[in-house]
Length: 256
Image 1 (cartoon, one colour):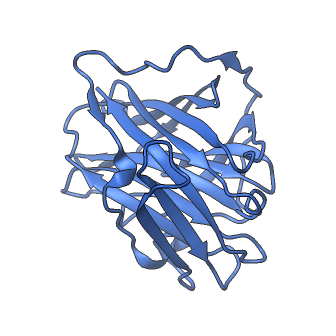
Image 2 (spheres, rainbow, N blue to C red):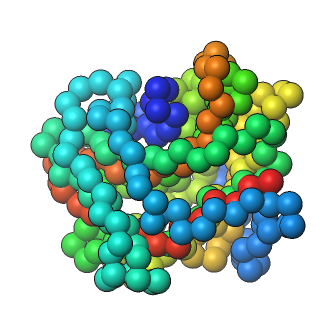
């Protein structure tokens, strides 16, 4: 799990799991979880430049660095004329590409945070990822509050990252490969407690179906003097190191 850049993690199918009861999906209302007047909304996040950090997406931030890149301003496929393409062309299995952005630090507890975007998988790539990961992260007064998700293809499950224990935990939510050639909407909801120093994963919505999660992790004390607020996307390569791309549009971060 990456510490220095404040973001994603990679895994092979051997990564540890902590089973959780299978949550029951519920129909999602129109997604307006964090749209109070006091909310901060960052729209079209995918259109801003993305940073990378070498092999930091690999397990332990070690080993070979895969070739990976992003391309902004994609007009097709796109919903609004400006999608971003994320690509990886690894030569070593289970190497990964990590993309992240820095925003104005949030200097208060986050009572509600949603990270949402539309995802497009090209035909022929629907089975090529080892995993697709995404996250937001707040560093506040030395504490790391990481909100990381992973769609794990081989084990067909959605998992969340425990930053302190450096492991992926099962949410009990089954993962179904995304249908290629169409757009899928994903939204993750979180909040934190900066007194108890905990991270709370509230729910995941996929294509209009909301899955309550309600799993709590302990935050990690890094001692960093710099407050940060970041978001990220990561592509994980599989055993065959197959190259693939995904497209992201209408990415939005909302918090209060």
